[in-house]
Length: 375
Image (tube, rainbow, N blue to C red; front, side, top):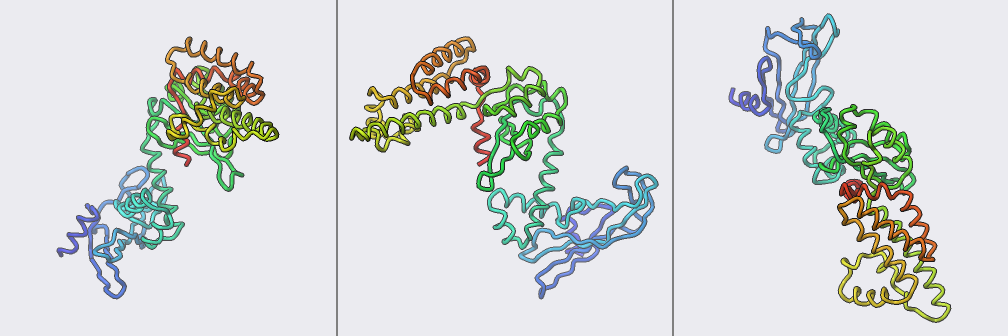
C-alpha cells in the first residue's frame, strides 16, 4: 500500500487516475508503476471537455525518472472515448504530453542536461536514441513558443542575422529578441522571403511595437523590413561591427598593397602588422601598442587608412542625430578624398547606408548578441 501511495505522490496522480500496482524486477533493473482510471469514473473528450462514453482502451508505457538507479516505467491502459463531435479520441494523461513516450518530469531532466552537455553525451548517459532526444527537444520548443503568447509588447528590439553551416555553403536567417537573448525565428537561406515569413506572422500591434531592428547592410533584409514594418526607415539599425569588418578589410587591403611596394625597395616596416591593423588599440598589449603607435604616426598609407577606420569607430558614441550626421559627413569627406581606393569603396557604401548607421547610433542598437547566439 505504501509503495503505491509513494508513487502516486511522486507522479502527481489524482482522481480519476490511481496507482494500482508497483512491480520491481531486480533482474531487469526496472520498476514498473501500473496506473489505471478508477472504475466508474467519468471521462471527457480531450478536445472539447464534454463528458462522453468510454470506447475502448490502449496499453501505453512511458519512461519516468529512475528510482534508486532502477529504470522506472509508467504503464497504463489508457481509455479512448467516443465524442459525437470529435470522434474517437484518447483521453489525456496528466503525467505526459500527447504523443510522447516519456513523462513530463523525464523530458524536463533531458532538457536540463541538454543545457549543460552535447546531444551525444545526454543520449549516451540516459540510454536514448538520437530520434528520442530530437523529439523531446521539438516538444520543448513547441511548448516554449506556446507560452510566449501573442501580446503586443512581446518584443521591442529585434536582431536579424544570417549564419552559415556545412562549410559555409548553406545559410539560415535568424531573428532574435535582443532584450531577452532568445531566438524567435529561423528560416532557410538569406533571401527576402526568409525574413518575410517572420513578419507575416506578426499582428499589426506587434509590428507597430517594434522599436529597432539591428541587421547587416544586406539588401534583401532591408527590403523585407521596409515593406512590412511601419516607420521602418527610422527603426532599421546597421550593425557597428558589420561596418568595422568592412573597414578592417579595407585597411588590410591597403596594408598588403603597400607592403609589397615597400618590400621591392627592401623596406620591411610593415612586416608582421597584419593583425595589429585589425585590432583595437584598447585590446593590444602595452609593447604591441607602443610599436604600433610609432607606425600609425608615420606617413604610410596604411597609417592613414587605419586612422580613418578608428575615427569611424569613435563616431558611435553620439546621442544626437544632428551631431552624428554632421560627424559622419565630415568622416566621409576625409575618407573619399584619401586616395586609398579600398577606403573610398567602403566610404561610398557607408554614405549609401548612413541613415541606418545614424539609427543604430541614436537607438543604441547592435547585433553583437545575435553573433553570440549564432556561435
